[in-house]
Length: 143
Ligand SMILES: [Cu+2]
Image (cartoon, rainbow, N blue to C red; front, side, top):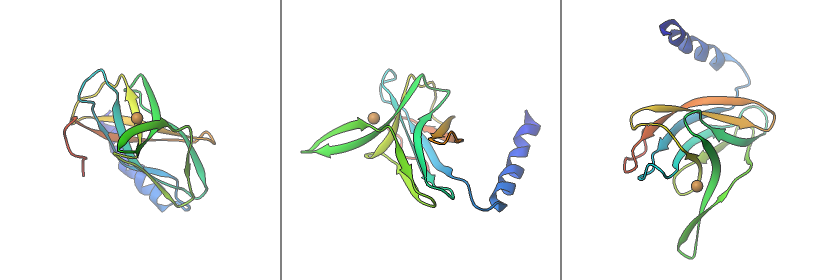
């Protein structure tokens, strides 16, 4: 297990030299629900690769189910609607953040200070996985 972990920096260094750059997920984090039976929310920034792409879902093995949502306020009321697809332009950026786009994680098993793997699935079948830092319900977003 230890040797497998040591390989990771080498792989990252190699891929950084490749052109064009693949899409990537950065600054991924999860805020746990105040009530454990409620869904938690995941946030991140996606950077586009060399081609336009369409995000079709974000999931984690640590949750039973996940859904992409967009929060909106109308007349002072906050509500949210499911998102089926999110466009990620070549070289562009899409941010999921509190008050906007987010991923609801149902039945999440995680503890503050830990991480959960988030897997991003694109319409062309491409996937990428990034670790998300887990924070408690009242905690600020991680750096
Ligand atoms: Cu939601």
